[in-house]
Length: 390
Image (cartoon, rainbow, N blue to C red; front, top):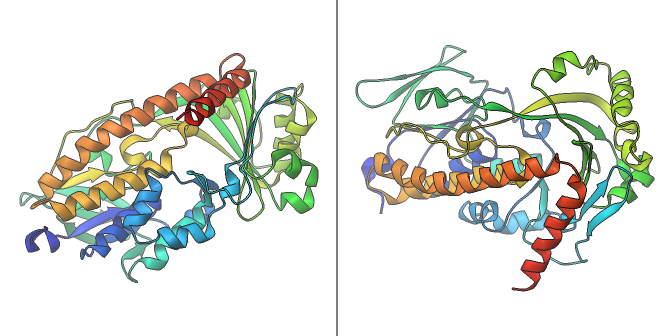
């Protein structure tokens, strides 16, 4: 049981994404009063990313510890587990369809809805928006002094970096920086797909679609608001966004140029680009080295992408962040001091995050290899046969 000396320690979490919010909520439910600092002026999660599949053995366990599992089940989309794989000619090589009323182990929820769920359970005042961390200073008494760009200063017993791939907390623990993964993705949106483009909505179905070929990909995912989130994906050099000449700030011209890059692909797949609405967001995908560890400190640790950012091809990012949050919160609540809690959390986290990072790396290599669609469909069919045989 936690001693009062730990219960009254000041814990600061940098970043109000799913990981940071989950950590704050589980700690709050165990009597702690953490504070979350978020650089955005308001909740940023509706603008970041699309639909998330929340796994039974990680993200869902964290939601149970946060007391939100039943509410989560009321709003998730089990039908979002549909998954289709095609090659560039439009040939369907894998067509997984979730059975009506079947509750699978990886239901879908939009990132904004997930974070609204977490925010609704947190004490008012526990999140402070508009606080961008400028620097953190280690003090002689073992505490950490936080300096924010707005001039505010805080002093804490435990600093948790939940601030993503380019964490400002990570440099306190390591000189290692996230590196370019070799993959660049262009994010587009097809709004209200069922009504505006019923042909594409029918082709995509209710979940995810991966079309792969020529070391490129077009990935589509249906969100809860009816939009198709689309990722045109390329295995290219890091400077490709700077040298390709595509004016991403001019959506119609950018779409025309992207369609040229997929010029010999089937029209049903090219429609994911052709039908896109609004701004287009180019992004490089980064990762930390597989098996990354840092120099342990009793007063600073990391969760989520700050600890183990990887490509999205294992589908583990948000689930790992929530698993980290749960494990760290439970360690803090069950150890007599923060040093022991941090050590217990980090050793376990290194193990499972390394496994996920290896899986992510292997999946990225497969998806951008020759005959990628055939290989991915074969891999998924193998999983189905294995699981069906248990």
